[in-house]
Length: 111
Length: 110
Image 1 (cartoon, chains in turn brown, cyan):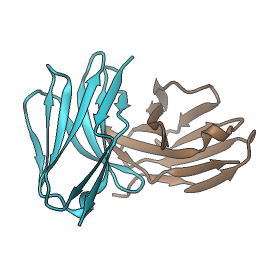
Image 2 (image 1 turned 90 degrees about the horizontal axis):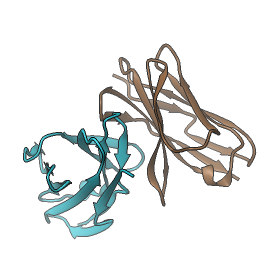
Image 3 (image 1 turned 90 degrees about the vertical axis):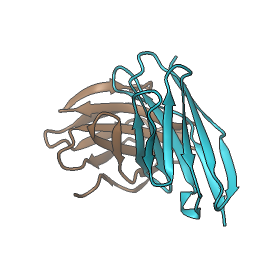
């Protein structure tokens, strides 16, 4: 089975712009979670989608949003980018609660 | 506020040594504790522990959970350079949300 894929792998944006990241889960996995990872903060949970519904949400401002499509693919959007949004954004899909399979991540740099 | 604390934050040992990584948690309505290994980018799943005192084992790696004392340990015996990675533990709460520790950076010297 193909693993979790994320696009793009690298992205450079300017403050104030918006960005959309994409995640395709492993076939058959209906749950998709998004994380932000920075050296100082570790893995921070953004949100989780299951069957097109947001099931859980972390403590991030409203500039961070997401959605899931009927084929379980998910997108994450960040509006009005700030320098502090520079991070590795990881997506993970799961079939069984807790056992998550991570994609390679999208490295976002905000200048 | 729920939290997961890992120790040590970093560890350097020589090949062949045995290491023990620690994870303590304070989570309301605990469900399970999970261990992941992160080498370059994506963390990979190692173990999920739900019951106290039952050891999970995979090759040279093993892990056990103590729900009374609220901690888990991950043991790696006969370490190899390929074991160098960041080891993450996470707790799953009643909403199935994972709360992650900061990780232990393990470096194995040849």
